[in-house]
Every structure is written in C-alpha cells, then in structure tokens.
Image (tube, rainbow, N blue to C red; front, side, top):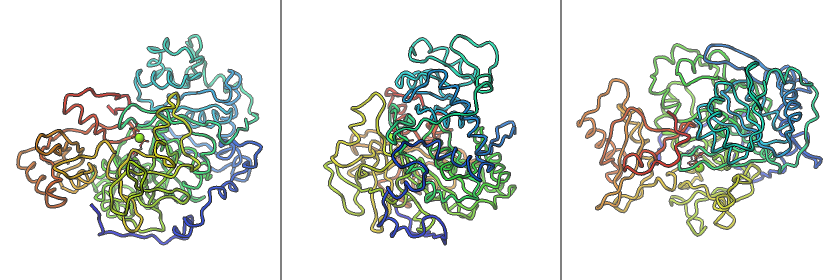
Length: 575
Ligand code: ATP
Ligand code: MG
C-alpha cells in the first residue's frame, strides 16, 4: 500500500544537506577524524562521549536533565558525569573487574544507570542493560548466558535476583544503589563505595574491536539473542545521530526509550553524548499529559520515540495537546515498528511536523534506513539507506530483486556497528550470514522505483491467503485509519480452503462498543481501502494487544494464544 498523497520536504541548512551526493562519496573512514583517539594507540567510546567534552569549554554544559514520576529533578554537566563515572570506574577496578568482564544493569532510568554504563566502558568491561520490569526468569536467562560477574541494581529489584542467585555462580558482586545498610555477603553499597573512591581514573584504552555492550533482542519473534557490540560502533553512533536525528549543539533532545532496549542505549546515551548534546531522561511510565509537560518544561527540540507511543498519544486525543506549549519541538523521529501513515498524518496536523520513521535492529547497532530532513517523506516508507549502508531486496539464493518485488531485506556486511557476536551462540551468529556477502535481517520488504524501502513484515509474520501474500502491517495500518480503531494486531490462522485467513485483534477508541455491525463495517472499510483479499475474515475486539517491553506488537503470542500452541519465550512481554 503506497501513499502518494503527502510528500513533505523540510528546507535544510545543517547536517545531511544533499543525500544523493553524500551517499555516492561516503567513506566510513572519514568519520574517524571526528574523534580524539582513532590513531592506533587505542580508543574508548567513554572518552569520546564524555571525557573530551568535560576537558574543554563544554565542561559546564548540561549532559543530562533528569526527572522522575515524583517530580524529583536532577541535572548533570559533562564534567559531573566524568567525575562520577571515574569514581565508579575506580570502584569496579578495585573489585577486580577486568577488560571483557560482563557487568549487568538492572535499574530504573536513574542517573546511576547512565553513569554506570559510562564507567563500565572506561574499565574496558562489557555493559548489559536490562529493563527494570524484568522478572526472575528473564534476569536469570541473561545473567546466566553472559556469565555476568557484577550486577548493579537496587535493593527492591534485587529481591527478584535473590530467587535465582544460586544458579548464577559467575556472579561475584552486587552493587546496590540506595542501600547503605543491611547488606548481605557479596553486596556492596554503590554510594558508600563511590563516595570513598578517587576522582582520578586512568581510562583503559582498548582496541576498536573490543566488546562494549551486550543487548538481548526484544524477543518479538522468539527467544532473545545476546547481541554483542564493540567500541568501533561509535563511528556509526556518531554520524547517524547527527544526520538522521539531525542533532545540533543547541538542541535539547529526548529519547523516550529505556536503555534495556537498544534504542535507549545507542540513541539515549552514546549517540547524543558523542555529539555533545543535552538530553532529557524521564524515569516514569507513559502518560500523555506527563510526556507533553516534559516537552514543554525542558523545551525539547528533537524527540525520538516509537509508533506504539505515538498511537497512544493519538488515542489520548487532540484536546490535551492544546494545554501544553510544544512550540520548542522542531524534529520528530520514530523507530521500532512500522509507522502507520495515519499517525504521520495526525502528527502533521497536531504537531505541525512530519514524523521521520527509521529502521534498524539490535544487530545492526545503528540506524540503517531512514527518512532524512533533506528528503521528501512517503508516509508508510522507512526511507532510504544511510550513506555507507548498502541495503537490497534479495531472494533466498542471494539474487537481487527488482523494484516492487517483495523479498528479504539484506545488508552488505561490514558497516562499523554490525554485531560482532551472539554471546554463547556461534551457530545463531552464522545464520545471519548464511547468504554469502550478505547480512540477512529476517524482515521482508520491497524497494520502490525511487529507492525508498517499504516494510512488509517479519519473514515469519507474512500471511499467505488464497494465493496472495499479505503483510500484517498494511492491514494494521489500514485498520487504524478507521475512526473506531485505536490499535490492531494481525495474524494468519490456518484455513483448509485458503491456506490461511486473516484475523484481526482490535482495540477500540474511547466511545466505541464492540458489535457485529461494527465488525461488518470495519471489514467493508478494509475491502475498499486495501483489497478484497486482505480484509480480516475474523475480528476479535480486545482490551489490548500483547507487546514487548520495547513496545512491539507480539504477533507470535497472539497466534499461539489463538491456536492454543505453546507461547514460547515471553520474558520480554509488557504486563
Ligand atoms: P527478536 O529479534 O528477538 O524477535 P526484535 O527483532 O523485535 O526481537 P529489535 O532488534 O528491538 O528486536 O527490533 C528490530 C526489528 O524491529 C526489525 O527487524 C523490524 O522487524 C522492527 N522494526 C524496527 N524499526 C522498524 C521500522 N521503522 N519499521 C518497521 N519495522 C521496524
Ligand atoms: Mg530481531
């Protein structure tokens, strides 16, 4: 489904000014000159993201504006973050942490989380951020698989670790934030140790290929994989942040993602700080009014969020938007799931700004396909490959397909932030590269004649019905255009006659009630809007659709529940 009705272009004076020329001449090696230490004597991303700014005239620039649900506020300059991460790095070194050790983080979005990730990089260890909502099983899987040596958490969250502690022999120390008393064996107070520690720390210079972080994928399609990245990722982090998120020195940037999801680590820590940007962190649950008040209060200029959040804001209605002054906003980006054209249209109307969709994965380590300020947007398209990234649509044999043909979305291997390892699973790692020369993404897509990429679906989610292949996204997008529909999840269910039929799970907007008539009306709407073969023969009204903690619709769970099959790994399910 291609929408040609809105084509929007912003006049551009900064950042990526001419996409075509830049794409033609781009060489990743030229990005190294933006860093202090890329000369062969060792690098460290923490030096480039924090220390170098803290050592020059930007030392007093705010790196972090922090606020939580109880309206507690804190501010940290680049030199504050340097000092505090140096202290923590000394604590870690004194505990015997060495290069390559895994240190996991099980914290809400508190400042200590951000400081810890910097400190871990400084000692050359590998950080493993986890969502604070994880239950014992999810924590156990990750700590066990990675053989984490240290865990940084809070006393409250640590209760969930107590239950599984005995199956984690590699775990030597637990650093507790906000716990001065009643510490058990192997537990250490974060505050008392850092208070005692020296402010002077000699950073560990590492090889660009040394590991930096492990992030387990969102678990949308199956068991999460321990995707491992290296310091060299900084090359991609830096330049994609500059050109896709369009960040400049005077911006106030808000990435709504938690560092437990790759977006929150790469574009909520490394990307903005490598670019010396002031960023906002809100440690609290989604709430439409609260979110708008954050934009108003901090005068957020650039906002990076996800389709699910945008759909929730759309559902919350236009009235509340009028209560807040959102005039500081100048640029909005979205990632994580297909961005429905209807949401873009709504954004244009209420924020007076287009929303720029972009596509990437935990494995790719940085944005690969994007809409840029200098290019028109085709709503529903993920945009064009980032300079230095060669994206193609191929078939299972590696043959490149023509524009318009649906196939596997694949990338020529070798960009700086490509995954280097699946922790403890070499076989899984090799599967990504089974087609010679290519990294295969597991997503199905097509490219149009102008070189724009359109997402069709996860390879496993594409529905085969009566000889047609239907991507769930196009049906979901058409459904949310109906005034009664707030959200929709689409699956294929087995059918003897048609091989599969389309089933829709629908969450209704306020003021609408489920009824057979409404079902019929929605079905007719899709037949007209999309195609007769693509309408959902079955519709189930539901209160919500299951999502991962990173906000993605878990279609495999909808399907398993519907068909009474085993639900598989649901450690990342948002409850
Ligand atoms: P798992 O691999 O464990 O199933 P996951 O793939 O959801 O989890 P992530 O790495 O967080 O884990 O998500 C990457 C995937 O998210 C992509 O492969 C794609 O399917 C989807 N995605 C991300 N951005 C977009 C986008 N802009 N449009 C469409 N899909 C997107
Ligand atoms: Mg994936």
